[in-house]
Length: 109
Image (cartoon, rainbow, N blue to C red; front, top):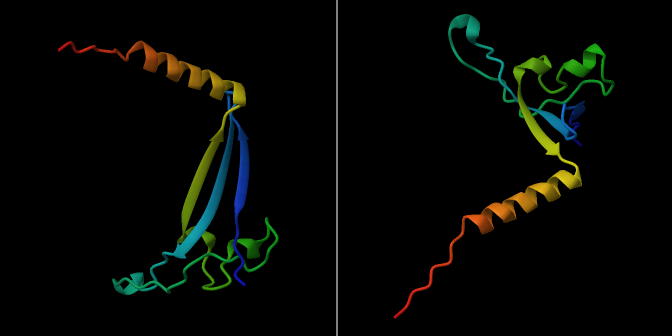
């Protein structure tokens, strides 16, 4: 079974919305042949922390390839959650704009 390190961060924005970021570390991009002018990666497909405890040195080292977490591609998924009253206001505004700028044209034959 693969271990996957997922970091969830909650930030309070200046508005009343809530921002959740899901950070995942993908394949290793360390160039092992850079010293001789080449390009070779080790094939590690996903970051797996050597120890499960956050804040330790082992949490920043990959168990599969031994590289630091910074060498792995970082994928950030951001989700913004608005309170329900703001969503209702936005829906009403969209309806108003749609009705205001939509004209009905009658064609007489």
